[in-house]
Image (tube, rainbow, N blue to C red; front, side, top):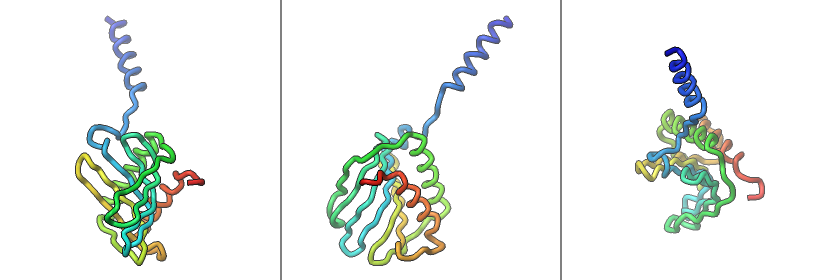
Length: 151
């Protein structure tokens, strides 16, 4: 009886230690994290995206607001980076629910979940470092560190 308990406990302990959880599941599979710069008048955008589906980092751009987003894969991230960034982004959007303060041009951070039809976007004027955009600027800057230097 004692040996059976030890074996069951050992299997339970091994199972707990070998199972790694991830934030990527059926609900978050359609998540896109986007950041970059745009122009209000033309609707152009130049920036980057990370997709939960393949953990790819993409160069994203469009010429005007009627254009589709053109994507080119340039790198990838590991699941831990994606999950930490996703958590940071959701936390920031939860704390600061609205930021729309563009100039002629803007800088933005976006959370898009195509599975749950949620789209959050923070926009600020990159010429100014305002208190209201502080957390989103920090998030943008941390994402820019993930972009390969030659891209």
